[in-house]
Length: 126
Image (cartoon, rainbow, N blue to C red; front, side):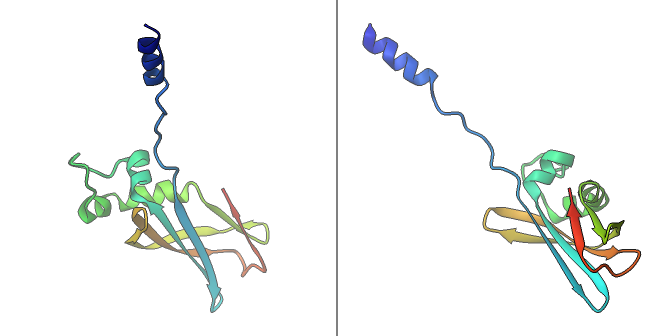
């Protein structure tokens, strides 16, 4: 009886499994009087946030991602604000690409940063 109870308790205490935390990569560069950025966001995170897999087959195709470019850009840019020397800068997505990182596929947004003046320093906010 004790053995059966011990086995039952061990099964009830099985470890909880969770999904991998979100990943993204943000890079900013300055040159020729312009600021540019690139933001790589995991497709699995975008699927969870806005839904990319239109046919529900578990695979996100380039066509499915391309059809949602506007929503991807809106979702991403609503979560990123840049200020140059305390003044807000406007972000403009110029290019949508994909890339493969060690943990899967990523949407790549290349964007231009338009500030009121060329900032001496840039602050990235949330």
